[in-house]
Image (tube, rainbow, N blue to C red; front, side, top):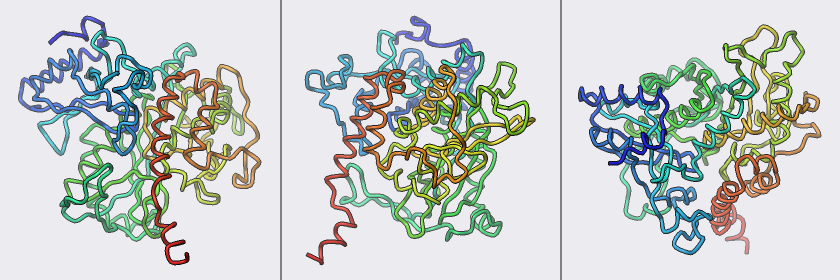
Length: 477
């Protein structure tokens, strides 16, 4: 197998050292299988499982996967006519469902606590000539984060993730439950809801949370806290601050770990924003952001209370300037727009405030607080982590470059005159297309490709007869 990594210099010294550590685990037989994975456009992990000794060679030579995996909507339908001339999103190398190669990033390898002899390794996508494959969301995030280097700072990210866990019966998939997508699982609740942060509720669900805690920590993720959220069967996990790319990798691994561990234990973890259950509370993904100097100093921390550090002010202004355009990456599903409701602890417009949970961007901290940060509350937990974080990096950096100033804080966020967030996925698609900075930095080809995938989902949704329509009209007319 050719050594594409060596030929094209695709690994850093850190990655070479990580490969040696993984090789030692394989030689000792502690790792027998390797799952080589990449994040698709939706932030879903896809890839191949290989016998460990074969995987070592494949990591350097690349593992081929059909490029149609980059062309699918959320039902796993290929939405581009890849066998027609020019039908592969304008990418001749992807024509005819040609292969792209997964090239491993050895620094990401983790032994799975729930599958002791198996390791995960995240990958980047390349062609056989070593060139980067288009539409690789992990590379988009890496490039967006690297753009802060000329300013002698780095983007730091903390994760605050809400999601649901349900009990499920032992799952048997009937013949009539296949399809694109297949039937969702049956489920029952772990908690009744409306018992936010109550000790008794936490104790009653602690066996499930402890199961996740052990596996998440053993996977090497920087878990900080676990909480009972407001809705039925709803929880929140928070994670420590890391670099931007590491944070996106961690979110990918956390979601996959939660779903795999739960499924093995007759549970169902879902990061869908607003499941269809009684008394549901929508789940958000709050993205905490700051800029750090090379010595670790938080450049968002002001010198005096009530003031703004200059970088924080400009970065905040950039997030607001592109708040509507970036919504498609923070909230990329039709379901996400059920969450943007007034007086709901979720934002409904592009505003900011000091320690205010009704705004889109919440400013937290002050003088002497090394944890001073900006929290974007617009995201849903189903978002592609790489694209969500990349959109924030691009937006904030634009504010820094242009020396933008934010508007006044919205002390009454649901009554302010700030622009409204998009109210639907279709409106978010239009907002992205209208944002010249995001389109330029992400590239017109990527924006057109991504919007077309989202438009395919919208078309399928528009063709469905909903429960509401059936209830409203079937008996009346």
